[in-house]
Image 1 (cartoon, rainbow, N blue to C red):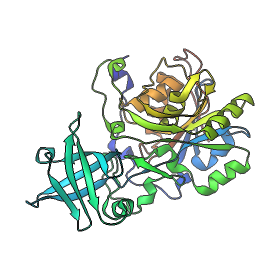
Image 2 (image 1 turned 180 degrees about the vertical axis):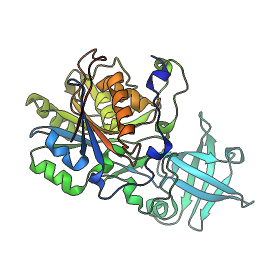
Image 3 (image 1 turned 90 degrees about the vertical axis):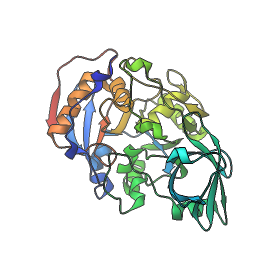
Length: 357
């Protein structure tokens, strides 16, 4: 398939610059990829589309305050260090700007209590740095680090916690799993009371999530690797849900990539952790996930390709066109979409109906 097959027109004013309050007041476009219907609702209505015995699978990763600003010693020149991955207690894989000045042996000072030394270069132009500090590193990072926002968000975020889900707990992401930003603690409690099961996976979102696809034929694209964990408790919940005839509903593309990476066969899954570079695009046969909560994604992105694999490319692009017309808010702080089921195998064509509720 060609990259241009996943393009759509998006006016810049449709890109949400700030989150709305409360979290679940965002709009929810409900798609049925089999019936080819579209409903316009709000996220607080999600429970109407879930049944007792369904399992919602959430990604509990927490975004690191990963951007640090420092000065090179002894010149005092400004330098920016972006934390990508922890290698051991004090060593990190990072991106450094300007990189040319960050050679092995260079010391970077961030404050009186924190400095770092460049130890090595990485294959992709990054740097391995080793931190020296007084006190607890995580506490210092919370004070000095800045939570990175996606490049298409230009306004300053007043409350840093609005770029975190209410259930985040495993620190390690360079970006938020944004489909989960819509949930409030109260809504999750209501869904539990309704008989919906809640399970957690962890996938630490890498910067590669913002990397554009630069090949004409999408099959030639090389995905970035990200670390994931599927605990036994969640694997058992999925097995029980499947056995009882319930749906496994992934919240976000990160959850779907975790579950499909851990799948062993159709409907078969067990606890697993490791690195995944799974690339899901039309033609992929889903093994675990039955329904999906997600946001609206960038044109020509691997995330849009994943949604197209789930619901059919033409139907998804039709829904995106309708979302633009209906003035939905797009991307990380934007509105949400609920795909109630997977498209029938090979279902690409068909009549599209819209219901404005």
